[in-house]
Structures are given as structure tokens and as C-alpha cells.
Length: 110
Image (cartoon, rainbow, N blue to C red):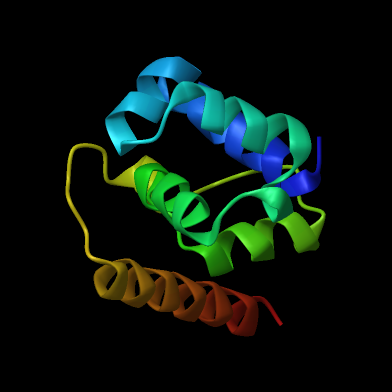
């Protein structure tokens, strides 16, 4: 399982849904999700990767950032906004604000 697939698998588990229920929720066959997780995200269609990311409340860029950061502490914006529908633009704005707040914290410590 590649790093991106591991992250997706973990986030689905943390959502409280089974893989089958998650796949049905986002409108892809459970077999497609299973294939994506076992064969790797890079072998999946772009449309399906986008559907999975949207279903998890993250962008594809955030998935890549999580996979390349080597940080095993997967934290998503969506985890802090359960039950709320956010557009991609709103999620991006929240992410930028979060980074801004983190940078202020670092500046105050140094």
C-alpha cells in the first residue's frame, strides 16, 4: 500500500464508516475503492481520487502534502468540522488561516 493509500485508509477508518459505506457515500463502487487502496492511488482515475478526497474533506494537494511530509499524525480540516459542508475554496481558506496561525505561534516562540 502506498503512502497516499495508507492515509486514505486511515482517514476512512477515523470517519467511523466502513470502506463499503464510505464508497457508497461518495458514489464509487466498493471494489473501486478497494482496488485504489491495494494497487495504489496513482493507478486510480483522477475522478475517483477527487471523489475520495472530497469525501474525506481534503484536497488532492493536502493528500500529497500529507504523503510527502512523512508526518504520521494525520490531521485534516474536515475532522474539525464534522457535519458541515465546505466548498474547496472555503477549505483552502481555512487551511491558509491555519498555516498563518501556526506561523504566528512559531514567530512568538523564537
